[in-house]
Image 1: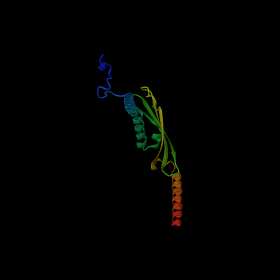
Image 2 (image 1 turned 30 degrees about the vertical axis):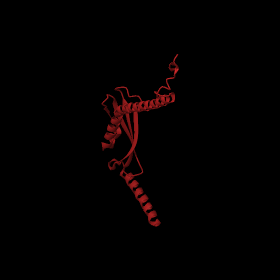
Image 3 (image 1 turned 90 degrees about the vertical axis):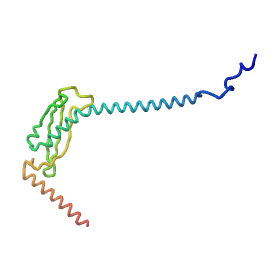
Length: 168
């Protein structure tokens, strides 16, 4: 029997193929890349979903806020208002107006509520409450009260200026 038949194929030529550690490392790298790409894809899908949901109530609240800021008559503003939104819901807004310690400066608590129409999107608020301040000289109910506030502001300014003049 010739000896050649019992020879190992390793000795015959150069080694071909990958070793087990090389295959395991390459599979680990591929798995990590697949996980990163899948997470990025899910993030993009969530972003698209959030962008689609954001337009419904935010636009309605911005429109109602613009109505409030554009209305010069305090009595009309205190009555509130409502309108139909594009998605079939009814939007009702109301305000609470209170004076501040500054003359002609008022704090407004703006409430915008949604009802009816299509069911709201999951996570979307049924009511939005915002607080902001507006300068409205025409809203003064009592002129004497406004004059007292102006005098108090003048006194505070004079006091501050007196302290600064003494510090120099």
